[in-house]
Structure formats: structure tokens, C-alpha cells
Length: 90
Image (tube, rainbow, N blue to C red; front, side, top):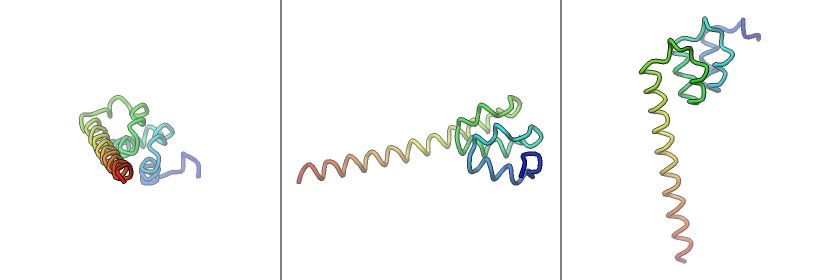
């Protein structure tokens, strides 16, 4: 299916899977909902968000996602360190 034949719902689903798809979303379909979904998938999609859609809500969405990722990463590191300490003390 060509990019011109996609519906707004298809574009939304596409950016949820790969936020960088926002680069090829036609301007008519770059809604706040689509842009937020894209940056929630990857903050790198910010580059393709039109300036007029770079709102507080959008940036809060990016920050929230990054906090969740950082929290998950720190939990993994803590768990890995505990496992390593347990193995070395045997």
C-alpha cells in the first residue's frame, strides 16, 4: 500500500510500531495523537514533529517515557549486580 493510500488509523498504528515512520507521514495526518504516539515509541521521532505540534503535552510524554525506560534499566542493573555478587560469594 502506498503512503498516499493509508488511513489516519493506519498511520497511527505504523508510528506506534516504529516512531521514525513519522518522517514519511503526510502533513495532513501528522495530528497531535500521531506525533505523541511516535515520540512515545522513540524520542528520536521529535525531529519529524512539526513545530506547531511541539507542545508541553508532547514533551511531557517524551520525559515520561524516558523516566520509565531509565527506571526499568536501573532495576535490571541492580538485579544483575545482585546476581554477580551472589555468584562471587560462592
